[in-house]
Length: 290
Image (cartoon, rainbow, N blue to C red; front, side):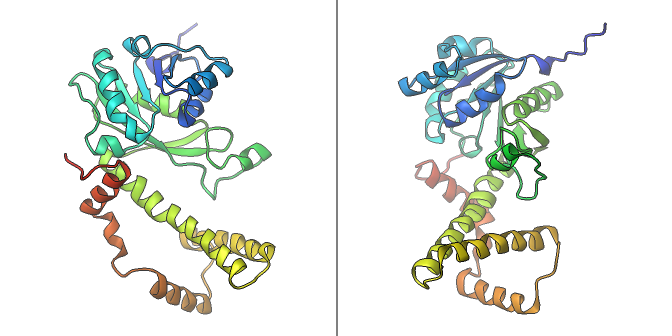
């Protein structure tokens, strides 16, 4: 019988911060794979979550020593300190994988010439993804039942290392459709600028608008929520998929909304200096120094 197992099929992986929100999410998926996984967590509450899930805890020093990929599943503000303690212990040729681009883009991660840095982030299930089961409908975040894509960046041209990172990405965010490869800077432009600065802000604005319709205008909440959620789907489908054209009257209302709510220079958020300001605020830095 021919052995079709590849290097990327059986990796040694260390999850640092295994008891946190993202640490638990990625660990819940990694435990289902054939990878050899070590789980490290320093907080007592996190340690309790790991052990309650039936996983064995390993001290960080021991977990990272032989790992092919070390996942830092810790908050952005902790990445500088955690990477400083972890990177010197990693074996030559190993990959340091973070789950958000901010710290990597800002140059906060400890570097070693023989340790490869990579970043990934889930796309979360699309509003247009085809769903069939109650579990798929309920999985809005991803990583449980609904299909999602993922974004990844790696600072290496080594095809084997890229394959290892993709294998880990597909495991921790499963089920995954496509893994899209970009640069670290491009990933930072997507997250936070495109999806947090803009999309999540618009989501919060929709909630504020719903509250205004109910609390100020006096519209019954079920009626306001029903028409908002339905029209939000139509608006996204028409704008992003071209399903149907907006009516002429709707286009006039949209123009009024743009002039009343949106600043003329709003696209400046995509400029490099604005990205630096945004990330500096998120990371509690005076400025980004690279």
